[in-house]
Image (cartoon, rainbow, N blue to C red; front, side):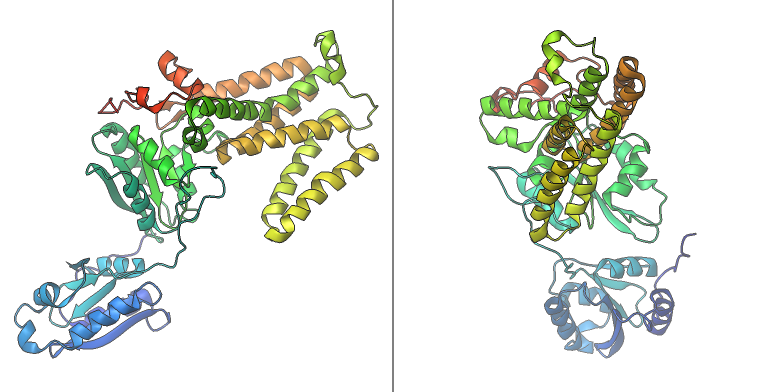
Amino acid sequence: MGREELGKIRSRLEENQKILNETLGIDVSFDVIFREISVGDKKAGVLFVDGFIDDEVTTLILQTLLNSSREELVPGTLEKVLTTKIPYVDAETIGTLDEAVHHVLSGPVVVFIDGESRALKVDSRVYPGRDPEEPEIEKITRGSRDGFVETLLFNVTLIRRRLRDPRLRSEPLIVGERSASDVVLVYIEDIANPKLVNNIRSKLQNMNVDALTMAEKTVEEYTTGSYWNPFPEVRYSERPDVAAAHLLEGHVAIVVDTSPSVMIAPVTFFHHLTHAEEFRHDPVMGVYIRWVRVLGVFMSFIIIPLWLLIVLEPGLPPPVLEFLGPEEDYAIPLMFQFIIAHFGVDLLRMASIHTPSPMATALGLVGGLLIGEIAVEVGFFVPEVLLYAGLNAIGIFATPSWELSMANRVIVLFLVILTGLFLFPGFVAGILLVLLRLVTTRSFGFPYLWPLIPFDAAAMFNVIIRRPMPVQKYRSDFLDPLDKTR
Protein backbone atom coordinates (compact mmCIF):
# COMPACT_ATOMS: atom_id res chain seq x y z
CA MET A 1 0.00 0.00 0.00
CA GLY A 2 1.42 3.37 -1.00
CA ARG A 3 2.10 6.28 1.32
CA GLU A 4 -0.51 9.04 1.49
CA GLU A 5 0.39 12.30 -0.21
CA LEU A 6 1.47 15.06 2.12
CA GLY A 7 0.15 17.91 0.00
CA LYS A 8 1.45 21.40 -0.57
CA ILE A 9 3.99 23.17 1.62
CA ARG A 10 2.31 25.19 4.37
CA SER A 11 3.15 28.82 4.92
CA ARG A 12 3.69 28.21 8.65
CA LEU A 13 7.05 26.63 9.44
CA GLU A 14 5.72 24.79 12.53
CA GLU A 15 3.11 22.92 10.46
CA ASN A 16 5.70 21.77 7.94
CA GLN A 17 8.04 20.68 10.71
CA LYS A 18 5.31 18.66 12.45
CA ILE A 19 4.31 16.83 9.25
CA LEU A 20 7.93 16.12 8.33
CA ASN A 21 8.68 14.87 11.82
CA GLU A 22 5.80 12.37 11.59
CA THR A 23 6.78 11.28 8.09
CA LEU A 24 10.57 11.07 8.42
CA GLY A 25 10.84 10.30 12.12
CA ILE A 26 13.23 13.18 12.70
CA ASP A 27 13.07 12.69 16.47
CA VAL A 28 13.88 8.99 16.07
CA SER A 29 16.39 8.80 13.20
CA PHE A 30 19.72 10.32 14.20
CA ASP A 31 20.81 11.01 10.62
CA VAL A 32 17.71 12.99 9.52
CA ILE A 33 18.26 16.57 10.72
CA PHE A 34 15.98 19.62 10.81
CA ARG A 35 18.19 22.60 11.68
CA GLU A 36 16.34 25.75 12.77
CA ILE A 37 17.98 29.02 11.70
CA SER A 38 17.08 32.67 11.13
CA VAL A 39 17.03 34.15 7.63
CA GLY A 40 16.53 37.92 7.52
CA ASP A 41 14.81 37.93 10.93
CA LYS A 42 12.47 35.16 9.70
CA LYS A 43 12.36 31.69 11.16
CA ALA A 44 13.64 29.03 8.80
CA GLY A 45 14.50 25.34 8.83
CA VAL A 46 17.08 23.34 6.93
CA LEU A 47 16.22 19.67 6.34
CA PHE A 48 18.87 17.17 5.24
CA VAL A 49 20.26 13.69 5.77
CA ASP A 50 23.65 13.70 7.41
CA GLY A 51 26.07 11.68 5.30
CA PHE A 52 24.54 12.69 1.96
CA ILE A 53 25.59 16.34 2.03
CA ASP A 54 28.82 18.10 1.19
CA ASP A 55 29.78 19.72 4.50
CA GLU A 56 31.72 22.60 2.97
CA VAL A 57 28.99 23.58 0.50
CA THR A 58 26.24 23.25 3.12
CA THR A 59 28.23 25.34 5.64
CA LEU A 60 28.76 28.05 3.04
CA ILE A 61 25.03 28.13 2.28
CA LEU A 62 24.11 28.34 5.97
CA GLN A 63 26.62 31.13 6.58
CA THR A 64 25.20 33.13 3.67
CA LEU A 65 21.64 32.72 4.92
CA LEU A 66 22.50 33.56 8.53
CA ASN A 67 24.34 36.73 7.47
CA SER A 68 21.40 38.03 5.40
CA SER A 69 19.51 41.06 6.71
CA ARG A 70 15.75 41.66 6.54
CA GLU A 71 16.18 44.60 4.16
CA GLU A 72 18.01 42.39 1.65
CA LEU A 73 15.26 39.76 1.51
CA VAL A 74 11.93 41.61 1.87
CA PRO A 75 9.66 41.43 -0.05
CA GLY A 76 9.83 38.15 -2.05
CA THR A 77 12.14 36.44 0.43
CA LEU A 78 12.37 33.06 -1.27
CA GLU A 79 13.03 34.44 -4.75
CA LYS A 80 15.71 36.80 -3.46
CA VAL A 81 17.39 33.99 -1.52
CA LEU A 82 17.45 31.90 -4.67
CA THR A 83 18.73 34.62 -6.99
CA THR A 84 21.11 36.57 -4.74
CA LYS A 85 22.14 34.46 -1.75
CA ILE A 86 22.72 30.89 -2.90
CA PRO A 87 26.20 30.60 -4.45
CA TYR A 88 25.45 27.18 -5.87
CA VAL A 89 24.55 25.98 -9.34
CA ASP A 90 21.84 23.37 -8.76
CA ALA A 91 19.11 25.15 -6.78
CA GLU A 92 15.37 25.52 -7.38
CA THR A 93 12.07 26.00 -5.60
CA ILE A 94 9.58 23.21 -4.86
CA GLY A 95 5.91 23.39 -3.92
CA THR A 96 4.95 20.15 -2.14
CA LEU A 97 6.06 18.29 0.94
CA ASP A 98 6.20 15.06 -1.09
CA GLU A 99 8.85 16.65 -3.30
CA ALA A 100 10.71 17.81 -0.20
CA VAL A 101 10.72 14.31 1.33
CA HIS A 102 11.86 12.72 -1.94
CA HIS A 103 14.67 15.22 -2.46
CA VAL A 104 15.93 15.01 1.12
CA LEU A 105 16.04 11.20 1.03
CA SER A 106 17.93 11.45 -2.27
CA GLY A 107 20.56 13.77 -0.79
CA PRO A 108 19.80 17.47 -1.47
CA VAL A 109 19.15 20.05 1.25
CA VAL A 110 15.68 21.63 1.54
CA VAL A 111 15.25 25.08 3.14
CA PHE A 112 11.87 26.13 4.56
CA ILE A 113 11.19 29.79 5.40
CA ASP A 114 8.32 30.85 7.64
CA GLY A 115 5.61 32.63 5.66
CA GLU A 116 6.57 31.03 2.34
CA SER A 117 4.40 28.39 0.66
CA ARG A 118 7.35 27.07 -1.33
CA ALA A 119 10.74 25.73 -0.25
CA LEU A 120 14.23 25.88 -1.66
CA LYS A 121 16.03 22.71 -2.82
CA VAL A 122 19.84 22.87 -3.03
CA ASP A 123 21.60 19.84 -4.48
CA SER A 124 24.82 19.70 -2.48
CA ARG A 125 24.86 15.92 -2.05
CA VAL A 126 27.95 13.74 -2.08
CA TYR A 127 27.27 10.02 -2.05
CA PRO A 128 29.72 7.61 -0.45
CA GLY A 129 31.45 5.93 -3.38
CA ARG A 130 34.62 4.67 -4.95
CA ASP A 131 36.70 5.86 -7.87
CA PRO A 132 36.27 4.23 -11.29
CA GLU A 133 38.35 1.06 -11.55
CA GLU A 134 38.90 -1.58 -14.20
CA PRO A 135 35.97 -4.04 -14.22
CA GLU A 136 36.80 -7.48 -12.85
CA ILE A 137 34.74 -9.40 -15.43
CA GLU A 138 35.45 -7.40 -18.62
CA LYS A 139 39.21 -7.01 -18.34
CA ILE A 140 41.25 -6.26 -21.46
CA THR A 141 44.97 -6.15 -22.21
CA ARG A 142 44.81 -2.79 -24.01
CA GLY A 143 42.45 0.14 -23.60
CA SER A 144 40.86 2.23 -20.89
CA ARG A 145 40.87 0.99 -17.31
CA ASP A 146 37.87 2.92 -15.99
CA GLY A 147 34.61 1.19 -15.21
CA PHE A 148 31.20 2.03 -13.87
CA VAL A 149 30.74 2.58 -10.14
CA GLU A 150 27.75 2.58 -7.78
CA THR A 151 26.98 6.31 -8.24
CA LEU A 152 24.52 6.97 -11.07
CA LEU A 153 25.75 10.47 -11.92
CA PHE A 154 29.33 9.23 -12.33
CA ASN A 155 28.17 6.45 -14.66
CA VAL A 156 26.20 8.78 -16.92
CA THR A 157 29.18 11.15 -16.96
CA LEU A 158 31.52 8.33 -18.02
CA ILE A 159 29.25 7.66 -21.00
CA ARG A 160 28.89 11.32 -21.89
CA ARG A 161 32.66 11.73 -21.75
CA ARG A 162 32.87 9.31 -24.69
CA LEU A 163 29.84 10.66 -26.55
CA ARG A 164 29.94 14.45 -26.66
CA ASP A 165 26.84 14.43 -28.78
CA PRO A 166 24.23 17.12 -28.00
CA ARG A 167 21.56 14.58 -28.97
CA LEU A 168 22.57 12.15 -26.22
CA ARG A 169 19.60 11.96 -23.87
CA SER A 170 19.58 10.86 -20.22
CA GLU A 171 15.98 10.68 -18.95
CA PRO A 172 15.58 10.37 -15.17
CA LEU A 173 12.87 8.12 -13.74
CA ILE A 174 11.89 7.20 -10.18
CA VAL A 175 11.16 3.49 -9.67
CA GLY A 176 10.07 1.75 -6.47
CA GLU A 177 7.36 2.82 -4.04
CA ARG A 178 9.64 2.64 -1.00
CA SER A 179 13.16 2.78 -2.45
CA ALA A 180 12.36 5.63 -4.90
CA SER A 181 15.44 4.52 -6.83
CA ASP A 182 16.91 6.73 -9.52
CA VAL A 183 16.90 5.09 -12.95
CA VAL A 184 18.17 6.83 -16.09
CA LEU A 185 17.25 5.92 -19.66
CA VAL A 186 20.18 6.76 -21.96
CA TYR A 187 19.93 6.88 -25.77
CA ILE A 188 20.93 9.00 -28.77
CA GLU A 189 17.84 10.82 -29.95
CA ASP A 190 18.46 10.80 -33.70
CA ILE A 191 19.71 7.18 -33.79
CA ALA A 192 17.53 5.14 -31.41
CA ASN A 193 14.15 4.10 -32.76
CA PRO A 194 11.44 6.11 -30.91
CA LYS A 195 9.20 3.02 -30.67
CA LEU A 196 11.96 1.13 -28.85
CA VAL A 197 12.62 4.05 -26.47
CA ASN A 198 8.90 4.47 -25.74
CA ASN A 199 8.51 0.72 -25.13
CA ILE A 200 11.33 0.58 -22.58
CA ARG A 201 10.27 3.86 -20.96
CA SER A 202 6.72 2.57 -20.59
CA LYS A 203 7.89 -0.68 -18.99
CA LEU A 204 9.99 1.26 -16.46
CA GLN A 205 7.19 3.69 -15.62
CA ASN A 206 4.71 0.84 -15.12
CA MET A 207 6.89 -1.12 -12.71
CA ASN A 208 4.79 -1.74 -9.60
CA VAL A 209 7.42 -2.67 -7.05
CA ASP A 210 8.30 -1.76 -3.47
CA ALA A 211 12.01 -1.40 -4.03
CA LEU A 212 14.81 -2.25 -6.44
CA THR A 213 16.53 -4.49 -3.90
CA MET A 214 18.80 -6.07 -6.51
CA ALA A 215 19.06 -2.89 -8.59
CA GLU A 216 19.36 -3.62 -12.34
CA LYS A 217 18.48 -7.32 -11.94
CA THR A 218 15.09 -6.39 -10.50
CA VAL A 219 14.56 -3.99 -13.41
CA GLU A 220 15.44 -6.75 -15.88
CA GLU A 221 12.91 -9.20 -14.49
CA TYR A 222 10.12 -6.62 -14.51
CA THR A 223 10.85 -5.27 -18.00
CA THR A 224 11.61 -8.49 -19.90
CA GLY A 225 8.87 -10.58 -18.33
CA SER A 226 10.78 -13.83 -18.97
CA TYR A 227 11.27 -15.35 -15.56
CA TRP A 228 12.32 -18.91 -16.44
CA ASN A 229 14.38 -18.33 -19.56
CA PRO A 230 18.04 -19.15 -18.81
CA PHE A 231 19.31 -17.09 -21.76
CA PRO A 232 19.90 -13.41 -20.91
CA GLU A 233 17.66 -11.00 -22.82
CA VAL A 234 19.72 -7.94 -21.89
CA ARG A 235 23.44 -7.41 -21.75
CA TYR A 236 25.22 -6.12 -18.67
CA SER A 237 28.40 -4.15 -19.00
CA GLU A 238 30.70 -2.46 -16.52
CA ARG A 239 32.63 -0.69 -19.29
CA PRO A 240 31.65 2.82 -20.47
CA ASP A 241 33.21 2.23 -23.91
CA VAL A 242 31.04 -0.86 -24.44
CA ALA A 243 27.91 1.07 -23.45
CA ALA A 244 28.85 3.95 -25.77
CA ALA A 245 29.44 1.58 -28.69
CA HIS A 246 25.98 0.06 -28.23
CA LEU A 247 24.34 3.48 -28.00
CA LEU A 248 25.87 4.38 -31.34
CA GLU A 249 24.18 1.32 -32.85
CA GLY A 250 20.75 2.41 -31.62
CA HIS A 251 20.53 0.46 -28.38
CA VAL A 252 19.18 1.89 -25.13
CA ALA A 253 21.15 1.85 -21.88
CA ILE A 254 19.42 1.62 -18.50
CA VAL A 255 21.48 2.99 -15.61
CA VAL A 256 20.32 2.18 -12.08
CA ASP A 257 21.66 3.98 -9.03
CA THR A 258 23.79 1.83 -6.66
CA SER A 259 24.72 -0.58 -9.50
CA PRO A 260 28.14 -0.71 -11.21
CA SER A 261 26.57 -2.45 -14.23
CA VAL A 262 24.60 -0.84 -17.05
CA MET A 263 21.82 -2.72 -18.82
CA ILE A 264 21.89 -2.63 -22.62
CA ALA A 265 18.71 -3.50 -24.51
CA PRO A 266 17.65 -5.08 -26.73
CA VAL A 267 20.33 -7.63 -27.60
CA THR A 268 20.75 -10.86 -29.52
CA PHE A 269 22.53 -14.08 -28.61
CA PHE A 270 25.53 -12.94 -30.64
CA HIS A 271 25.92 -9.72 -28.66
CA HIS A 272 26.89 -11.92 -25.72
CA LEU A 273 29.75 -13.43 -27.75
CA THR A 274 31.58 -10.19 -28.50
CA HIS A 275 34.19 -8.57 -26.29
CA ALA A 276 35.94 -5.20 -26.27
CA GLU A 277 39.29 -7.01 -26.63
CA GLU A 278 38.47 -7.84 -30.27
CA PHE A 279 38.30 -4.15 -31.17
CA ARG A 280 41.51 -3.20 -29.35
CA HIS A 281 43.60 -5.20 -31.83
CA ASP A 282 43.94 -5.11 -35.59
CA PRO A 283 41.19 -6.91 -37.57
CA VAL A 284 43.24 -10.09 -38.18
CA MET A 285 43.90 -10.58 -34.48
CA GLY A 286 40.34 -9.50 -33.73
CA VAL A 287 39.00 -12.30 -35.95
CA TYR A 288 41.34 -14.81 -34.34
CA ILE A 289 40.35 -13.78 -30.80
CA ARG A 290 36.66 -13.92 -31.70
CA TRP A 291 36.89 -17.41 -33.23
CA VAL A 292 38.86 -18.78 -30.28
CA ARG A 293 36.33 -17.30 -27.88
CA VAL A 294 33.33 -18.67 -29.81
CA LEU A 295 35.01 -22.06 -29.92
CA GLY A 296 35.39 -21.94 -26.14
CA VAL A 297 31.72 -20.99 -25.69
CA PHE A 298 30.62 -23.83 -28.00
CA MET A 299 32.91 -26.23 -26.15
CA SER A 300 31.49 -25.16 -22.79
CA PHE A 301 28.10 -26.78 -23.38
CA ILE A 302 28.64 -29.44 -26.10
CA ILE A 303 31.90 -31.27 -25.33
CA ILE A 304 30.71 -33.15 -22.21
CA PRO A 305 27.36 -34.49 -23.56
CA LEU A 306 29.02 -35.30 -26.92
CA TRP A 307 31.81 -37.33 -25.27
CA LEU A 308 29.25 -39.05 -23.04
CA LEU A 309 27.23 -39.99 -26.14
CA ILE A 310 30.32 -41.40 -27.89
CA VAL A 311 31.17 -43.55 -24.87
CA LEU A 312 27.62 -44.80 -24.26
CA GLU A 313 26.96 -45.51 -27.96
CA PRO A 314 30.06 -47.52 -29.02
CA GLY A 315 28.78 -48.13 -32.55
CA LEU A 316 28.03 -44.46 -33.24
CA PRO A 317 31.48 -42.88 -33.71
CA PRO A 318 33.91 -43.94 -36.48
CA PRO A 319 36.81 -46.27 -35.53
CA VAL A 320 39.24 -43.34 -35.53
CA LEU A 321 37.50 -41.98 -32.38
CA GLU A 322 37.59 -45.22 -30.38
CA PHE A 323 40.46 -43.91 -28.24
CA LEU A 324 38.12 -41.36 -26.63
CA GLY A 325 36.49 -43.90 -24.33
CA PRO A 326 37.74 -44.60 -20.78
CA GLU A 327 40.31 -47.38 -20.54
CA GLU A 328 39.48 -48.27 -16.93
CA ASP A 329 36.34 -49.81 -15.52
CA TYR A 330 34.15 -47.54 -13.45
CA ALA A 331 31.65 -48.29 -10.69
CA ILE A 332 29.71 -45.01 -10.83
CA PRO A 333 27.80 -44.36 -14.09
CA LEU A 334 29.44 -41.67 -16.20
CA MET A 335 26.34 -39.51 -16.17
CA PHE A 336 26.47 -39.28 -12.37
CA GLN A 337 30.23 -38.68 -12.45
CA PHE A 338 29.68 -35.65 -14.69
CA ILE A 339 26.82 -34.38 -12.52
CA ILE A 340 29.00 -34.63 -9.41
CA ALA A 341 31.93 -32.97 -11.19
CA HIS A 342 29.60 -30.26 -12.52
CA PHE A 343 28.35 -29.42 -9.04
CA GLY A 344 31.88 -29.70 -7.68
CA VAL A 345 33.22 -27.07 -10.10
CA ASP A 346 30.37 -24.71 -9.25
CA LEU A 347 30.85 -25.32 -5.54
CA LEU A 348 34.57 -24.57 -5.87
CA ARG A 349 33.77 -21.38 -7.80
CA MET A 350 31.32 -20.25 -5.11
CA ALA A 351 33.79 -21.07 -2.36
CA SER A 352 36.54 -19.03 -4.07
CA ILE A 353 34.19 -16.01 -4.30
CA HIS A 354 33.54 -16.11 -0.55
CA THR A 355 37.18 -16.80 0.34
CA PRO A 356 39.54 -13.90 1.18
CA SER A 357 41.74 -13.07 -1.81
CA PRO A 358 45.07 -14.25 -0.33
CA MET A 359 43.54 -17.71 0.26
CA ALA A 360 41.55 -18.03 -2.98
CA THR A 361 44.53 -19.29 -5.01
CA ALA A 362 45.32 -21.93 -2.41
CA LEU A 363 41.68 -23.01 -2.41
CA GLY A 364 41.76 -23.43 -6.20
CA LEU A 365 44.90 -25.53 -6.04
CA VAL A 366 43.54 -27.74 -3.27
CA GLY A 367 40.15 -28.18 -4.94
CA GLY A 368 41.36 -28.59 -8.50
CA LEU A 369 44.47 -30.70 -7.99
CA LEU A 370 44.51 -32.49 -4.66
CA ILE A 371 40.83 -33.44 -4.42
CA GLY A 372 40.61 -34.29 -8.13
CA GLU A 373 43.71 -36.50 -8.07
CA ILE A 374 42.57 -38.40 -4.98
CA ALA A 375 39.08 -38.85 -6.49
CA VAL A 376 40.63 -40.51 -9.54
CA GLU A 377 42.93 -42.74 -7.48
CA VAL A 378 40.10 -44.12 -5.34
CA GLY A 379 37.98 -44.77 -8.44
CA PHE A 380 35.38 -42.09 -7.81
CA PHE A 381 36.05 -40.52 -11.23
CA VAL A 382 37.68 -41.76 -14.41
CA PRO A 383 40.44 -39.37 -15.53
CA GLU A 384 38.53 -38.34 -18.66
CA VAL A 385 35.67 -36.96 -16.58
CA LEU A 386 37.98 -34.47 -14.87
CA LEU A 387 39.60 -33.63 -18.22
CA TYR A 388 36.31 -32.73 -19.91
CA ALA A 389 34.96 -31.03 -16.79
CA GLY A 390 38.08 -28.86 -16.84
CA LEU A 391 37.66 -28.06 -20.56
CA ASN A 392 34.05 -27.16 -19.87
CA ALA A 393 35.13 -24.81 -17.07
CA ILE A 394 37.68 -23.13 -19.37
CA GLY A 395 34.97 -22.51 -21.95
CA ILE A 396 32.68 -21.09 -19.29
CA PHE A 397 35.30 -18.63 -18.06
CA ALA A 398 36.15 -17.64 -21.65
CA THR A 399 32.54 -16.58 -22.30
CA PRO A 400 32.39 -12.75 -22.42
CA SER A 401 28.92 -12.57 -20.88
CA TRP A 402 28.75 -13.93 -17.34
CA GLU A 403 24.98 -14.37 -17.71
CA LEU A 404 25.40 -16.48 -20.85
CA SER A 405 28.12 -18.57 -19.20
CA MET A 406 25.75 -19.37 -16.33
CA ALA A 407 23.01 -20.26 -18.83
CA ASN A 408 25.43 -22.65 -20.52
CA ARG A 409 26.09 -24.32 -17.16
CA VAL A 410 22.40 -25.15 -16.92
CA ILE A 411 22.26 -26.28 -20.56
CA VAL A 412 25.18 -28.69 -20.22
CA LEU A 413 23.63 -30.27 -17.13
CA PHE A 414 20.33 -30.63 -19.01
CA LEU A 415 22.07 -32.29 -22.00
CA VAL A 416 24.10 -34.64 -19.79
CA ILE A 417 20.97 -35.92 -18.05
CA LEU A 418 19.05 -36.43 -21.32
CA THR A 419 22.02 -38.12 -23.00
CA GLY A 420 22.71 -40.36 -20.00
CA LEU A 421 19.09 -41.48 -19.79
CA PHE A 422 18.07 -41.74 -23.45
CA LEU A 423 21.41 -41.91 -25.35
CA PHE A 424 21.30 -40.63 -28.95
CA PRO A 425 17.56 -39.72 -28.98
CA GLY A 426 18.04 -37.84 -25.71
CA PHE A 427 21.05 -35.94 -27.07
CA VAL A 428 19.20 -34.91 -30.24
CA ALA A 429 16.04 -33.99 -28.31
CA GLY A 430 18.07 -31.86 -25.89
CA ILE A 431 19.79 -29.95 -28.72
CA LEU A 432 16.45 -29.36 -30.44
CA LEU A 433 14.83 -28.11 -27.23
CA VAL A 434 17.70 -25.67 -26.65
CA LEU A 435 17.43 -24.41 -30.25
CA LEU A 436 13.66 -24.07 -29.86
CA ARG A 437 14.18 -21.99 -26.71
CA LEU A 438 16.64 -19.75 -28.58
CA VAL A 439 14.37 -19.35 -31.60
CA THR A 440 11.32 -18.42 -29.50
CA THR A 441 13.21 -15.96 -27.29
CA ARG A 442 12.71 -12.28 -28.04
CA SER A 443 14.47 -9.33 -26.45
CA PHE A 444 11.97 -6.49 -26.13
CA GLY A 445 10.21 -7.85 -29.21
CA PHE A 446 13.35 -8.39 -31.31
CA PRO A 447 14.42 -11.90 -32.49
CA TYR A 448 17.15 -13.33 -30.27
CA LEU A 449 18.96 -15.30 -33.00
CA TRP A 450 19.18 -12.46 -35.52
CA PRO A 451 21.00 -12.33 -37.97
CA LEU A 452 20.92 -16.14 -38.19
CA ILE A 453 17.14 -16.36 -37.79
CA PRO A 454 15.83 -14.41 -39.67
CA PHE A 455 18.90 -14.65 -41.86
CA ASP A 456 20.77 -11.49 -42.82
CA ALA A 457 23.90 -12.32 -44.82
CA ALA A 458 25.68 -8.98 -44.38
CA ALA A 459 25.02 -8.84 -40.65
CA MET A 460 26.01 -12.49 -40.23
CA PHE A 461 29.30 -11.75 -41.96
CA ASN A 462 29.91 -9.03 -39.34
CA VAL A 463 29.28 -11.59 -36.62
CA ILE A 464 31.80 -14.03 -38.08
CA ILE A 465 34.43 -11.49 -39.13
CA ARG A 466 35.60 -8.48 -37.13
CA ARG A 467 35.63 -6.01 -40.01
CA PRO A 468 37.87 -2.90 -40.03
CA MET A 469 36.08 0.14 -38.64
CA PRO A 470 36.57 2.37 -41.75
CA VAL A 471 34.61 -0.05 -43.96
CA GLN A 472 31.63 -0.22 -41.58
CA LYS A 473 29.68 2.63 -43.14
CA TYR A 474 26.17 1.58 -42.12
CA ARG A 475 24.48 0.59 -38.88
CA SER A 476 22.73 -2.76 -38.78
CA ASP A 477 19.00 -2.92 -39.56
CA PHE A 478 18.33 -4.97 -36.42
CA LEU A 479 17.03 -1.99 -34.41
CA ASP A 480 15.82 0.05 -37.40
CA PRO A 481 17.83 3.12 -36.35
CA LEU A 482 16.77 6.58 -37.55
CA ASP A 483 20.27 7.41 -38.80
CA LYS A 484 21.54 4.39 -40.72
CA THR A 485 24.94 5.83 -41.63
CA ARG A 486 27.88 5.90 -39.25
